[in-house]
Length: 115
Image (cartoon, rainbow, N blue to C red; front, side, top):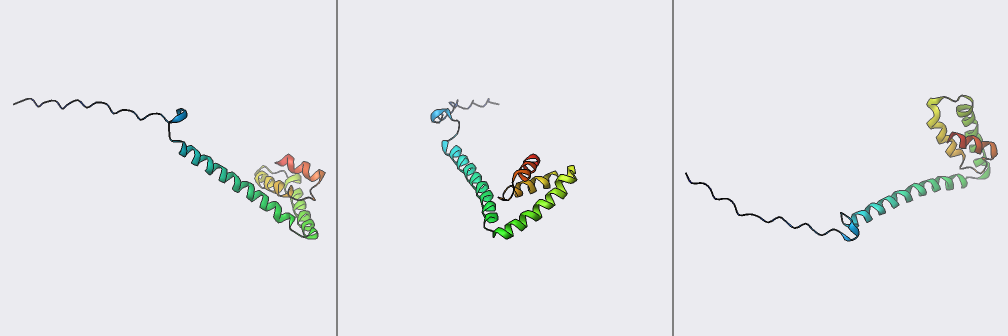
């Protein structure tokens, strides 16, 4: 039996050069992530602004009626009872009340305290 010959030595593969600035990956991946993050932020800001525009587009009498009903419900649900299970709902109600120009001193204090 003859011993098998050893395979020829393969030189190690050279490493690719590092990206400019010492980044380990191509810059376009970072750029793409930044653009995606910017778009997500723009969508959130746009959604919040559209809710405010919807409230402001109501007729003053209708807006006052919606505010009055929301404020009374908020007081019954969140101020008088203070149930821990209702905290997420109360935070959402507080955020909604702050969209109204009718939400003045007491309203703002209570809404901000629950947010």
